[in-house]
Length: 127
Image 1 (spheres, helix red, strand yellow):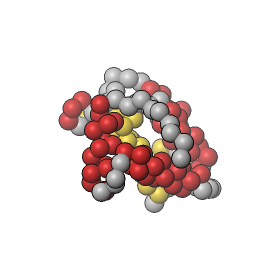
Image 2: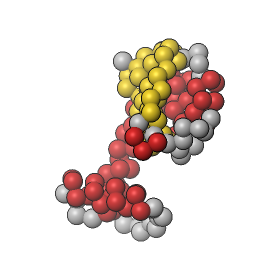
Image 3: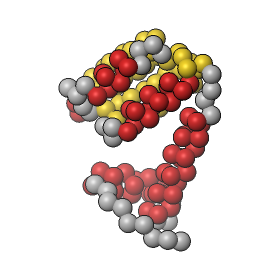
Image 4: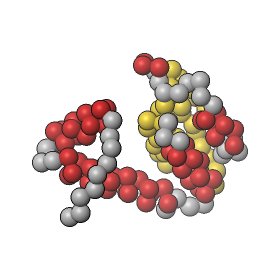
């Protein structure tokens, strides 16, 4: 197998080590491969969305004063039925959005949110 070098911060390393221990994996490489398979499955599921969709979009981020998500929400207000914002501990924010609309628009919105690398958690649960 080829060897790939990546840079991770201390939190990433701690999370990786916790995942490895929790799942009984023999090394970090196995943990990274598991994460890649999981991400691949989520992207595949997202790409298979078609037509009109309904569901809940959950976003956790720690940039309360940053307008990046507000701008994304405004650009996609035609598919957002309800938006709830809540403050969590450690200066994080929770956004819960009820989505109803075109799957292409939702997919674009999801990629837009994740491309900013600010969101700690992004999950769409189809209704």
